Image (cartoon, rainbow, N blue to C red; front, side, top):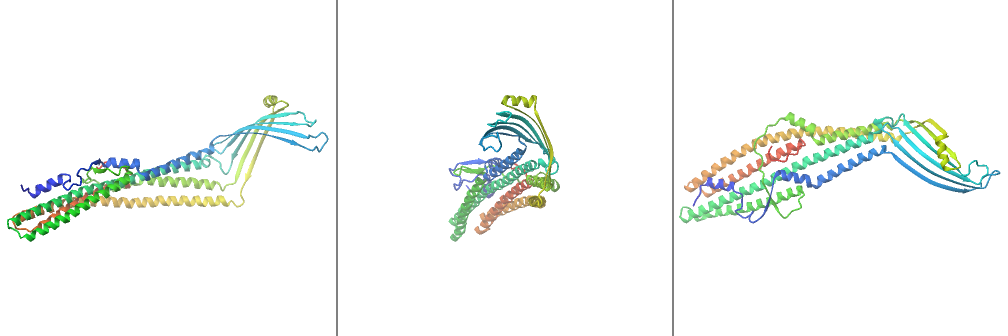
Amino acid sequence: MRYPISLLISFALACSFSINGFAGGKQFEEISLKAAVEQALANNLSLKLQQQNVQITKGRAYAAQGRFDARFTAEAGGQSEELTPLILGGAKKENSAGWNISTEKLFTTGTAVSLGWNNNSYDSDSPWTLFNPSYRSGLLLGISQPLLQGFGKKVQTAEIRAAEKQFQATAHQVDSEAANLAALVKRAYWNFVFTWEDIKVQELSLTLARKLLEETREKINVGKMAPVEIYQPQSEVAKREERLIFAERAIGVAEDELKLLLNSEDWLSSYRPVDKPPTEPISLDLPSILENSLQNRPDIKAADLTADAAKILEESAADRLRPNLALTGGIGLSGTDAEYGNSVNNSLSNPDNLWQMGVTFSMPLENSAAKGNLQTARARYSKSRINARLLRQQIKKTVRTAIRDVELAIKAVEATRKTSLATRKRLEAEQIKFESGRSTTLDVLIAQDAYSKALSQENLTNIAYANSLAELDRIQGLITLTSAP
């Protein structure tokens, strides 16, 4: 039974290919665009490396807070010394011991406070010693406040604030990497889809050539065509079988690229894409897309945060140029007795009082280190600001390019759809003319080839449109998980 060419074409395009056994008994795992993007975001090794950078900068930010941790110190020791007396009644042997505990705390204002409990004992064979052995126990509260370098919360917390900015910047860089990865996966997925769609076209092209070969053979058998006419459709069938083999190989190559991005552990099974590329046009608003890209893109946020961190470190470096001037003070209570317990009681009930107050000042005469560090910090801040400006300039250009690509892709989708329809009508006309003897096999083969190329170009244009939408998402720092625009 002979079917009309239009019915054959429609049937072949509607069915999935399996005529030449590419699918055969092969088992395929269906995969959607959403599943592909989610798997890549969860498993991609490059993204995992970026995520470790977040943990590193988070650890640095946490470690920077350590300068304000309270510190506890305990020490104990003893000493024994034999002496040659220099005066009458001088000690020939002395034993001493000490055990002290203290705690220190630096506050964000730069104020340093310490509290210590100091204990020591002394024993000698000198007859002139009032208490032998003697014990001394006391409390000492010390305080220090910088007045120039290191003064104020802003300076003291500079490293912490800079580390937190860098941590946030790294987190945004991971978000940017994720958006870039999602775009790569989308492109790989749509390229994979194209190979599956293209093999249908090649299968259809081969089917049409085989049909023409069969019709040519029938015409030769009834004497309507010369026997030499058989060679042209036969050679075309062989050529299209070769194209089908290349199309089958293209599927494997595209699938490998996709699996690599997904960090797949299963390289034995095969995927079958289930989503179709979007073909419906979308509306584009350049100002809103540009504003969204400049304000919401994670790499822009990361660049700004990096500049903020560099500014904080510059201010901290500038503070190092100032002289060290600090107000110091302390008060203490102590007690002494021949028994340790009484010395403790005396330090509270009948103490020996101590107080001190003073000012310390120091300043390097050259201060080369501070000047060099400031110059480095200023250069890093300037560099980070320039990088942020360059990134914004690049984004503006990229947005314009992406929107232009989407607009042109929309036009191309419509144009190739019309071309496919026109070449199909031409093929149907040539087939009718061939059946009535008014067209040659060459004319029909040329029409078939033009139609298959038009179909491939239409599929390729649809994929280009889908990829342009993926790029539009990427430049805005978006991660979309569906095929719909």
